[in-house]
Image (cartoon, rainbow, N blue to C red; front, side, top):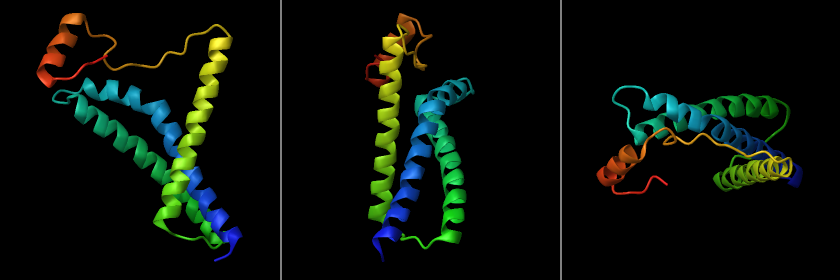
Length: 137
């Protein structure tokens, strides 16, 4: 195992972290709102379904690119390396999102994220809070 092989392997897992983090950031709240409209879906089921779809798309894209890279270069498969790469990729996405929010604030625009409970009135929020014993804020 050479340092170059190790870096290629780490870069491929960082790529997965970036793709996964970006998909979660862009699609999860929207998919949750969509799934909550399905009869019989509660908050947990909507979160699980949205997370599953975002993760499956990220895995599909990543393994396709991983196979392309692997056909040209030899890579190292190790869980520690995979975990580290995913964490680094996620931190890159978080940093990029942070820079985006700072830029938007400097331009005088408010950064709005879709909140799944945004359209509920106070009575509905109180009922859900009492039912599930947690706060929605």
